[in-house]
Image (cartoon, rainbow, N blue to C red):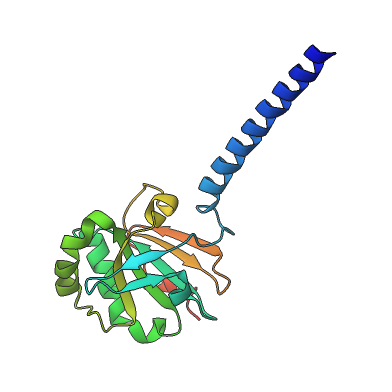
Length: 169
C-alpha cells in the first residue's frame, strides 16, 4: 500500500512538472501569435526617460517596431512613418531596439530626423520584450496591437504605407 501511495505521489509530481513546463513554453510563444497580449514593456530613451506599457495605452492601435538603429531598412521605415506622422497621430508608435543598441540611438535620431520631442518614441528594451516578440526573420518587425493591446498583425522588412494605413485609426 505504501509503495502504491509513493508511486502515485511521484507520478503526480512528474505530471505537474510537465504541465508547468508546457505552460511556460506556451506563455513564451503566445506573445508571438495573433491575439496575444502585449508583454510587459520597459523602454529607456536617449534622455534616460523610462516608459512602460501604460504609457502606450489608449483607445487606438499601437505600432511596435523592433529595429536595429544601424539598419538601412529600419531608417527608411522610421522616415516613412515620420513623414506621415499626421496619419499616425491617433496611434502610438514605438521603435524598440535591444539594450545593447543604446550607443547607436543618437545616430538613428540624426539619420531619421526624429527628435525626442516627437510623438514617435525611440528607445531600448530593458524588459526582454524584443526577445519575447522578435521572430528572427527580417528587420524591421512591426507588431500592431489593437486598443486592448492584443496583437492583430505582424509585418517584416520594408512595408508599404498602404499596408500600414489599414491599421491606423
